[in-house]
Length: 333
Image (tube, rainbow, N blue to C red; front, side, top):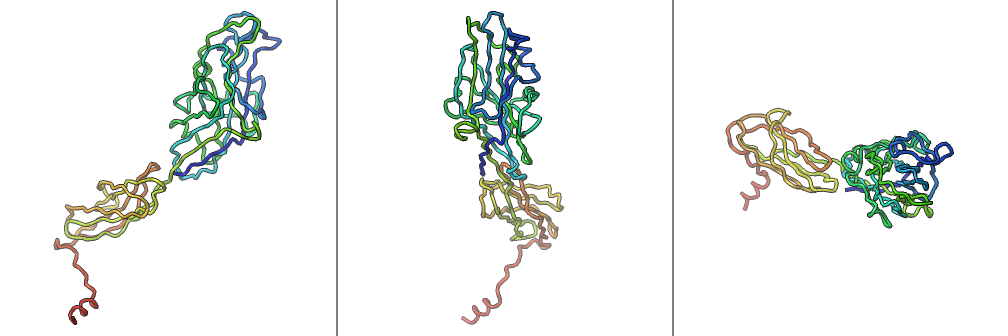
């Protein structure tokens, strides 16, 4: 099955910071995650940050200051329109992580809808959805220092756009998406924080930049060959699997008295270039039958052209044709 590795055409991070002149003591967790705009965006940093949860160094309980989210844009228009995506994996190079708050965060991926595909605006902070595109978030304990992987679920695969750009955002599933406040920790005289970071495309000349690895398949190609050994009540149907597109296919036939067919033979496992046949019985004398070959793989089912044959009226098998030249040469011996 073909596999393609894509790299971000754009990526960036967003920070909402409640530590300002008008609100120096932070806000509740519910207020922080409901923020509609970012205080800061960045698009050229060597790192992307998530879960930058800061508590205020003074002692107002359950007050939070900072929340980070990030967005990736991949140009997925190079994928063939007629392919079926079977798997997709977002790979990130985990870097630093800190959990001074001991809250054990995680990260998952979600669909994003930024205002533009080549820049970030402060209003993009709340453009990341809440439906997970990966069934299992990456836990803090599993983050870095090497690659971490998000395996897309069926919803995630369905969001990949074969005609243009595909956009993903990252959020903390446990606290940000769930709307559950992390355990609050007071650290006297210091900011308490937790974060998880990965390398961006701008890190060290693009080394270890994020990757979107997509595997896909095509529909197979199959040919319906003429029927053989046609008798009054039986015949053999024939076909050829022209292209399995990289995986074993289940091959068979549909047949019946009309092009609606109505009957399906058991399938046989075949690969590119192999022929397959099936004897069908219980046919009516002197009757026209239609049939077509089919082949099925993960991408779906494709069909050969319709063919037809007529059963013999006398119930006998088709006569054996002997080459006249061969017959004469036999008589001469």
